[in-house]
Each structure stands twice: as structure tokens, then as C-alpha cells.
Length: 273
Ligand code: GLU
Image 1 (cartoon, protein in one colour):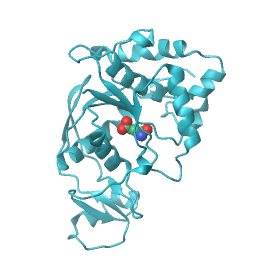
Image 2: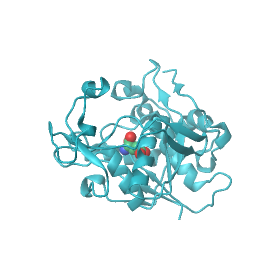
Image 3: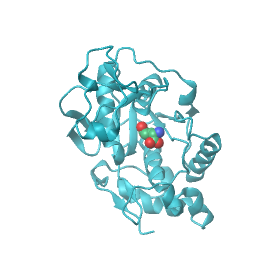
């Protein structure tokens, strides 16, 4: 069965960028574009692996924001903090080098023979060389550089996002991933991981990244773009959808909106406030 997912990380309140991504994920399952069957299901999976920053009260406020926007899910699956992950079947190496060392080609960990530990650290995926081909439902085929070898498991044994998301999308039977274009690079890594683990590769759709009026990615410093702040300032969900839906070629009302894959904006969009 076609299965989508909402996968919020409960370390910050949902903002307009999250609203667009989660709204598009909902529409994609509920009001499918041409060529897709109706009748899919949508899961909610709380991605609370980062125990230092993830908070249940934020997860609860995210659920409330989603409901306020009209984004309902069929089932909430086990949160990531209650699942276990293994590196079995993956070509990994241990590396405790800093980002700066890796960026300046000062790290040799990737090339050391298995078992040769230098400076401890987390386990990285030895990403196969060469560009990664990904298929995006709106952008078509893309060749992306694989990027730096991602950490899959921290030194303390906690799984990191790239491993967890790939394994969980497969475990949860996810067939389509809809998320912000800021995760295109992550998609390249994840496709490689799906391949390495012989797991089915979901369909991808990347929706435009929304930037604050300072031109930066939305974060805690853009509190006024958080849904709860907009709601407190008198915005209605209808007004939010009237602003966001055109970015994916859809028109209000949200409940019957349909994504027009040819009209999904490619570039990032800057908010006027
Ligand atoms: N938890 C991730 C985030 O909030 C999900 C990204 C994804 O959709 O894979 O950034």
C-alpha cells in the first residue's frame, strides 16, 4: 500500500517550512497526483534520537500544530528513541576527526584497514565513490555528489539520523518520502544506504525550502515563523495554506488540494516577514 510519513524531530516547534513539507506529504497520500492510486496511508514517526534535545512536550505541540493545519495521520508508529539499530551489513569505519580536519583532507580514517582504531569516534558509512542518481517526482532524475561519509552511529552506540531514517522507512513500509529541498543531499546518502542494505528505495518529492526574510534557513531565531506564533498573532490555517499551496502548484482549500508536479517551485522561497 502506498505509505507516506510525517517525521518531525521534536527539538524545535514547527515553522512554515515544516508546514509546507508535512502538508505536501499529506496531500500526496490523500489527494494523489495523476498516475498515483488513491487510498494510501500516512504515518507519524517522532524522530527523537537526539536525547539531549528531543522533548515530549515539543512533540505534543507538533501534533497539535499538525491537527490545527488539518494534517491528520492514520497511525503513530514507534518513536525512534524506542527502536534499535545495527551496523550489520554496512561498510563502516570509526572516525573521531573534526569537521575541519575532514574538510581539509586531513582525515585518513576511511583508508585504514578494518579494526585499526586511531582516535575512536563514531562510525561512518564508507560511501561508494561516484555521483548518486536520484529520482525526484518534480525535478526528474538528478546526479548528486555523495558528500562526506555520514556518521551512522555515535561513539556511545546511539544511531544517527541517516541510518535510522533509512532503516525505519523500510521497517514502516514507507513508499514515498516528501520533504524539504534542504534534504536533497541527505537523499543522495540515503539512496546509497538503501542500496547497501538492499532495501527498497522510496519515491522522493522535495518541496521548496522556505527562508526567513534574512535569507537564512528557518530556525529557532525565526520564532515569528513558528506555527504557534502565527496562530497567536491571529493567522488562520486557511491563510497559511493560501500562502503555501501555490509553492507546490496547488490551490486552496487544503482538504482538496492537489500537487501539480510541473509547477512545484525548484528554488528556495524567501518570506517577507
Ligand atoms: N526528522 C527529520 C527532520 O525533521 C526528517 C527528515 C526526513 O523527512 O527524512 O529533519
